[in-house]
Image (cartoon, rainbow, N blue to C red; front, side):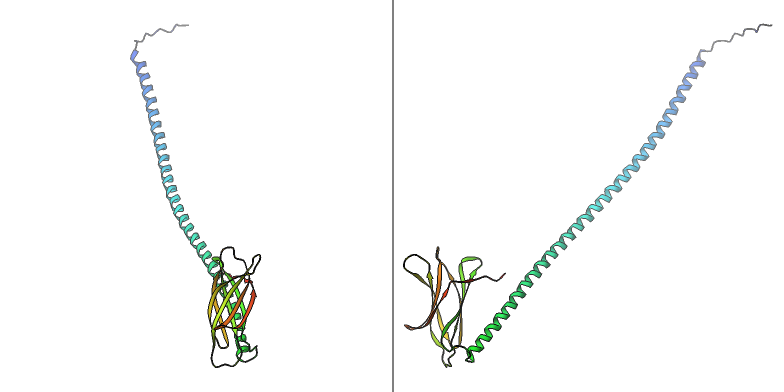
Length: 232
């Protein structure tokens, strides 16, 4: 067997170095390339996210404005409903008051017809007294007095109407003249006014006296009874 001859190559120290440098350059280039690709991809995603964010902000602003407008519309509708309910309630109350007033007027008309046609007592008399407390002034009372007479006369009966409070108290009876009105009646006269109680006064009854000069024509005493005020 023949031995292979040895071949002696000259040393090339820069070849290995060149290969190392080339490998480093290639590796760095690859890293830079992929790094640039990754950065571009991230920037593209970031741009997309920013665009979506801007769209979401615009949509959120639009929805906020739409919600505000709907809230204003709802508030307006609620106010209109409340106003309509209040108006309906007020109209219903006024209608009820008018119906009650018509009933009262029909009663008064029938009453006056009976007086003028001679179907009731012909004597001069204090026929009715109604008392009602003033809503805003608890110590004040509205009164309504109805005077009638059925005699056929050509001239009205004139004089004074004295309204006196009989008060509750120990010992002697106490009274106080609260008002004087003019008497001027032929068939029917209605007197209306307001009386105010003094502090701590407790009425027991009220006397209505009709006088002409120094002569008492008639009088009547009513118990202190206050009717309830109509709903406002």
